[in-house]
Amino acid sequence: MTNNLSFLMKENSSILENELEKYVNVNNSYGLNEVMAYSLLNGGKRIRPFIVIETSKLFSKEFDIRKALPFACALEMIQTYSLIHDDLPCMDNDDYRRGKLTNHKVFGEDKALLAGDSLLTYAFEVLASNKYVSDNNVRLATISLAKYAGFGGMAGGQMIDLNSAGNIKSFEELKLMHALKTSALIKCAVVLGYLSAVDTPDKEIISDLEKYAESIGIAFQIRDDILDRISTSEKLGKPVGSDEKNGKTTSLTFMSIQNAEKEVQRLTEEAISIIKKYYGDTDSFCSLVELARYMVNRTK
Amino acid sequence: MTNNLSFLMKENSSILENELEKYVNVNNSYGLNEVMAYSLLNGGKRIRPFIVIETSKLFSKEFDIRKALPFACALEMIQTYSLIHDDLPCMDNDDYRRGKLTNHKVFGEDKALLAGDSLLTYAFEVLASNKYVSDNNVRLATISLAKYAGFGGMAGGQMIDLNSAGNIKSFEELKLMHALKTSALIKCAVVLGYLSAVDTPDKEIISDLEKYAESIGIAFQIRDDILDRISTSEKLGKPVGSDEKNGKTTSLTFMSIQNAEKEVQRLTEEAISIIKKYYGDTDSFCSLVELARYMVNRTK
Image (cartoon, rainbow over all chains, first blue to last red; front, side, top):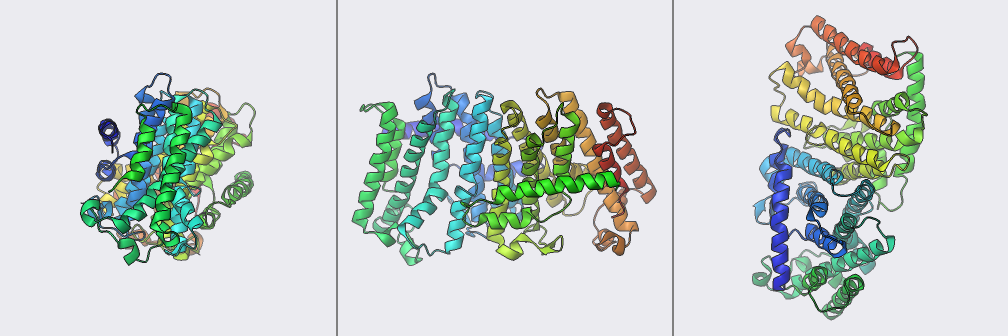
C-alpha cells in the first residue's frame, strides 16, 4: 500500500469509528446497543465506507464529508449485520472473527440474531436521516442499498453459496457468486458516494462506477485465491492452503496461477481506466486508482 | 366482527395478496423468492396493511390505493420477516405457524435466516420505490419503518422479552414490552397510511394516530390474556390456559379479570375518541373505529 493511501485510510477510519460510536450510543435500545457495538466497533479496514467517502470526494464540486458520512456508516452497518448472521451456527458456525469471539459466542444466538436484524434496520434509518442530501437522492440511495444487500445482491450470493454446497460448476458461476457476495456492497459504496456528491445523478456514470466496483471486487477475490496457494502463513497472518485442503472451489479450480494473475491484471487495468475517465489521465494521486492497485498487488 | 368490517378486510386482503405475489414473483433471486413466498403468502388477517390502507382512505382528499399499497406491502414484509426469525430454534423454536410447518422446518435454518433478512431488506426497496408518493414523504416513511421495526421498536421489545426470561416485574414493564413487540408495527401502519395520503404531514395528527395505535395494540394484547383464561379451546381454535400452565407473566398476573376488562374498555374508548376527532362523531361506518371495537370484543 502506498503511504498516501495508507494515511488516507487511517484518517477516514478514525472519522468513521467516531461516527459509528455516536450512532450506537443510544439509551433506548434495552441493551441491544451493546450487542450491536461489539461487532460494529470491531475495527477492520473499513474499505466500503472508505470508497463511499473517496467517491464522494471525486465527484463533489465542494466536498462536504457530512453528506457522505451517514451513507458510509449505513453501509458499514449492513456489512456488520451480514458478518454477525454469517457467523451463526446455522451458517458458517465461526467462533472467532478478527481474533475476537464472534457475536453469538459472547451474547448468545438469540441476541446476535436480533442485533444483526437491528443493524440492518438501523442502516436504513441512518441513511434516510441524512439531512445534507436531497430527498430524491436519499430515495435513490435507499433503493440502491436495499437492492445491493438483498436477494438480487449480497443475500442472493449467499443463496448461491448455500445451493451449491461448495460445488460450483463453472468459472462463470463462481464469478457470479463473488459478484454478489463481495462486489455488490462495493458497487453500493461507489453509488452511495456518488449520490452524496451530485445534485442530478447521471445513469451512465453510475453504470461506469458499478463496473469499476465489480472489477476490483472480483480481482480482489481471485488475488485471495492466489495468495492462499502461493503465500506463507507468516506473510498472510492466517493459514494457507486451506482452500485446497477443504476441497473448496476457487478460481484456481478453473485456471492456472499464471492465467489467474493475468485475469487480475486485466480487471485492475479495466477498473483504473474507468476512474481515469473522470479523474483525468494524470500521474497525481487518486485514491480510487490506488485502491484498485492495492487490492490486487497486496501480499496479505 | 360487523359484516361491513369483515367484507372490507376480505376485500383489502385479496388486493394485498395479489400485490405481494407480484413482488415475490422475481427471477433473479437464486431461489430466495420461493423461501420468502412460503411465509409471505401464508394468509393471515393482514391487520397491519389493512390499517395502512384504511388510514390512507381517512386522510386522503381523493383516495388512490396505489399510494398506500407499496407501504402496506412493505409493512407486511417486515411482519413476515419477524415471524420467520422468531420461529427459529435459537428464538421460540416453533415447528408450526397457522397450521403449516414453519419456514426453517421446510427450507432449513440457513435459508430461513436468509429469507428473513431478504424480506426485511426488500421492505425498504418496495417502500422507497413508491412512485405515487413525494420524495419527502418516502424519506419520512423510511425513517418511520426503520424506527418502529428496529431497536427502539419491535426488536427492542423482543430484547426486553429475552432479557426478562419470562419474568416481567411490573404491569408497566409488561405494557412497555407489548407496546414495542405488538403496538410498534401498528403505530407504523397508521403513520405509513397517513404519509401516503397527505402532502404536508402534521406532527400533531401523527402523534394522535400513534396513540390510537398504541391503545388498540395493548387492548388487543390484554384481550388475548383474558381469552386464554376464560374461553374454551373449541371457541378459540387453540389451547387455552397455556399462559398459566407455562407460568407466563400476563396482564392477569397484575390485575383481576374484571379490572382487565375495564382496562380494555378504557383503551378502546380512548382509541375511538381519537379517530372521531378526524372522522366526526357520526354513527356512520368508520373502519378504524370498527377495527378498534372488533379487536377488543372478539371471542377468538
